[in-house]
Length: 557
Image (cartoon, rainbow, N blue to C red; front, side, top):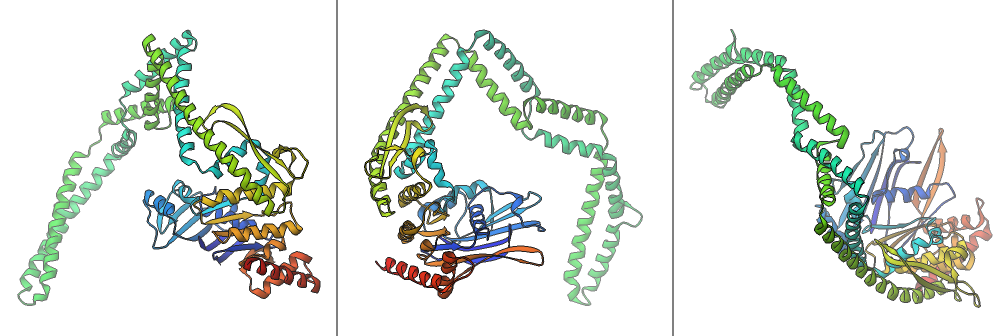
C-alpha cells in the first residue's frame, strides 16, 4: 500500500508531500490543474519511463520519493531475489532525474537499477490510464485481458518458452535448406570471419589493459623522473627526509627517559623513518625499471589498431566480437550439417513444434474455461454498473502458432435486449467501453498482487446515475485494496474515504501545482464546485451535501 509521496521539481510541482490511507483516495481539480502529474510521478516511482522534459523549468534535478507498506509475500520474495531487504514493514523508493542524464534509483537507501524497480513495480501499484478503455477497440488486446482474468501465468510462460525454442530451430532449418549456393557462400564468409577473430586471440579485458599500458609507456620518462626525484627527496639526496627523521627519532628516544610521555611519539617517528626509507627504495626500483620501450609501444599501438578494425566489423567491444564469433560458429555448424545432421535438425524442429502446440492446447483449454467464467462475471459486473440487459461473450478462432498460443480472441457485446451480439471493438460507445474495462479490471484484480490500484479518469464517457454506480463499485473495490482515482465526476468523488484537491496558481510569473487533503467541510465545497463550476451556489452546495449523504448511506449498506 502507498503511504507517502514526495515530489520535488517535477513538471509544475516544486515541492509536494502527501500521505495516503487505505480505502478510496479520490483526486479532483480543474482541468489542467496537474492531477495527471501526480499519476505520472507515481508511475516513475514504480519503474515508468523517464524523460528530462519532466524536470521543472530552471531546475537541474527532479526527485520522487514513495513509501510503500511491505506486506505481501510476493513483494518480499521479489525484493529478496533482487538482493534487497525491506526496512521492517516499509519500502522507500527514491528516483532522481537529472538534466545531464545521470538518473539514480535508490530502494531503502541502496542503489538499484531500473530493471530491479520494474520487476517489483506490479507488486506495488497497478495503473490504469485515462485512455486505456479505448484499447478495447483493438481486438488483439482481448486475449491479454482474458489471460489476466484467467491468471494462468505458468501456462503463458511455458507457451512462450516452447515457442521460442521451436522458432529458433525452425529458423536454423530454414537457413539450412535455403539455396545451396547461397549457403556455400555464406559458409565461406563465416569461416573467414571465425578465423579472423580466432587468429586475433582476443581476451575480454585486453583492450582496457592495453590502453592502460600505452598510457604508462607514453609517460615513462615523466614517471621515471618523478620516481628519481622522490628517491632523492626521501632517501638518497644531500638532505634526505629519511636522515632527518632518523636524527629526530634518535633525539626523542634519548629524551624518553626524561619524559616518558614522548615514548609513543618516538615510536611513531621511528615507524615513519622505516616507511620513508622503504618508499625511497621502492621509488629507486621503479625508476630503474621505468624506461621507454619504443618496440613495446609500437606493439601495443598495433594491437589496439587491430582490435579497432575488428570492432568496426563485428561489434563495439571485445565482448561483442567474441559473441559474434560464437554465433558464427553455431551458424556454420548448421550450414555444414550433412544429410544425417539435417535429418536430426528436422526431427528436433518437429518435436519442438509438437511441444509448442501441446502448450498452446493446454493454454487454449484454460482460456476457454476462463472465458465461460468471465462472461458470467462480466454480466454481473455490468449489471451492477447500470447495464442490466447487457450481454458479453468471448469468441475464439484459430490463429497461427505464436508465443501466445493459437487462439484468436475477441469480445462480443450487446447493450440492449433484442440486439444481436456484435464485435465489441466496433459497436461499443465510449461510456460502455469505460464500464466494460472497469468490470474487466475489477475481476482481474481479484487475485492480483498489487495492493494499490490507480484509475486515471475512469469516468470517461459516463455521467448521471451511472457515475454513482461506478462510485459504488470503486468504493467496494477499495474495501479489498487501496484505490487512487482521478475523477471529474462529483458522483464518484462523493464516495471517497479520503479526498485530495489539486490546484494551480501563478505567482511572480511562475505556475505551480499543489495538492492537499480536504477536510469534511471542504469536501462539500469541492463537490459543489464540480457540480456548478467556479461559483459555488447554494443549490450546488445543497446538491453536494445530498451526494455525500447518499454515498455515506451506500457505504454503510
